Structures are given as structure tokens and as C-alpha cells.
Image (cartoon, rainbow, N blue to C red; front, side, top):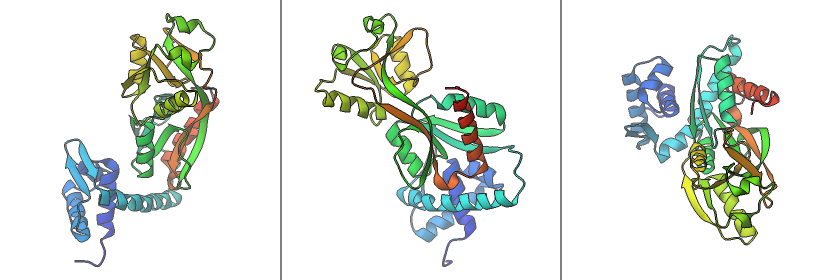
Length: 296
């Protein structure tokens, strides 16, 4: 057995972890699937542990895999930066961005504009609650995250896109929709529609009700912000959400909450060493332009 794994083994592992499948890694590397599989098997044998769990939905990193990927992905990023610095990369023709967010907005308008400018770049976009999004970003399972008030870390580059406050989102036909402001006490007899456990919204709302000595009303938990919107539209309750978290509807109103005047930052968060990659830089440039143009 070699004293150290070969760079081909590490690269095969890194791309498989990035892409989530052997076939996608092989395509990205321009090699056969069997080659990627063999390299990973040799690396696992060398380390004496499994790096992936094979599931129907794709590859899932083990604990050892996550630890190795946190290092190997940095190495692959540096190699990519070197390649871009010595190559002609003025024309951005293809690529793959793994994008996550904790709400549809402001991500969707940016994705739409980016797709118009760079139609050959593939974007994999998934919504997660705030806690999961930050974990995935820390584990380098995402290239870019659009999240509210990201955790501060020297390993993260962040850029603020906008600030917004929490408001009560409800049907315009609801009696409280006629108010210019409402209080937490006004919600005691209502049902609150909130995103799932782990969301920043749940943390903020629970903290506010404790701070002002108010009992939490009945809560209807949903999995995503689109589901929150559907629940409100079907008159299942009132959503306490950041302003502009939901796309506009002529059936909904957003009323300020007296006890929740604070504003929160919606930011792009990127692993710091990936900031200068051409794909990442191009996405950030588009996001800044969309913000400047009032696109969200």
C-alpha cells in the first residue's frame, strides 16, 4: 500500500462528494464511472473507513467523509483558482453552482436573472431551514447560501443584499388586516403559521413571545415558506415572517408588529476561499445588480 493516497483518489472522492453521485463525478472529471469507483475504493481501503453511504437518492458522506471533504474541497478550489488565473476565462460558458437558501426571496429573482445571462450554467437550488443551511455551508456542501443573518466566521465571506423586519402576513379579509399595526397580544386567539423547527423565524418568534410575557398561541408548522404562504391563503392562520419573504399576492396583507421593529440582514454567504472563482464571482455580481435595480 502506498504511503499516501494518490491525487487521483482524492480528486475522485472530492468530485463525488460535490456532485452527490459517481456518474456525475465521472462526467465532471471526464473519466469512466468505474475509474471513479476504483479510486474511491482504494482511498477508503487506505484510510480503513467508509467515506460514503450509498443511498437511492445518491451518495451521503459519512463522518470521516465530511472531515476529509472539508479539506479536499479547499484543495480542489485552489487548483481551480490556479487554472482560471492561467487560462482564458473571459467567456463563461458552463459550470455548476450548488445554491441553498432559507427562503424563496431574494434567491429566485437572482437565479432568474443569472439564468438569462448564463443559460449554460447549471444551478441546483434547494430550500433548507436556517440551521441546516448554515451547517451545509460550514461543511462545504453548498457553494453559495442566501440566508438571513448568517453566523459570523472567518471562513465565510458575506455580502448584505437587503434588510427587512418581521410582519404579520394574513388574508386581506381578516379583521386584523385593517390595522396599521398589531401587537403580539392581538395574536393570542389566532393560529400562527411558521416554518419548521430549526428555522430562524421560529427562534425569533418564540424569543419575542417570551420577552413580552405572552403565551404562544396555537402553531401550525410547515416545511417551507411556499407552504406557509399556501396555508395563509387557505385561511389556516397568520404568518409571522420577514417582509418580502413571500412573493406578492393581491389576497394577502403584511402588517407591522409593534414588538418586532428590528431589521434582519438577508445575505449571500460563500466559503471565503471560493469567492474569486469565476462562477461564484459572476453570481455575486448579478446579485448586486439585481439588488441595485430593485429586483427584490
